[in-house]
Length: 158
Image (cartoon, rainbow, N blue to C red; front, side, top):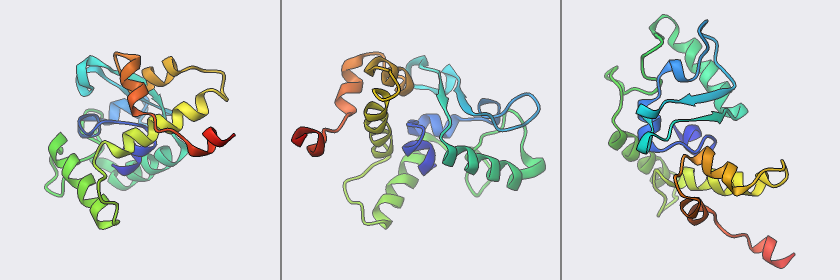
């Protein structure tokens, strides 16, 4: 869940609603991108999100670990009871993780903000723009994406 937040920029609802069909091909092989469906996203903001190597590696391990329990439309993330988690459960889980790590003031959205900030820094090097970051984040308005981006004291001093 943490990697999906920080390295894919997914919202708690998107993490909770992700199914194996969104991350695997028709043969059950983990893909190189997350095909987030509208039904799983806020405001029907389904999108393609490139899968960071760490996310893909974790998905491959999880897929192998779950083995025969992996069915195309089953949730990727589920509770110890075996049922899918709600968005609120994902929010609580990530909040507890941050608190355990001593990262007070962080929330389930902190990973998403980190993702957007990092994407904004790297997109220019790849010849992209903030519009590309907006699409990765699934924001309707560019102004929303801009609010997520943290400034850099290193950049200001350059």
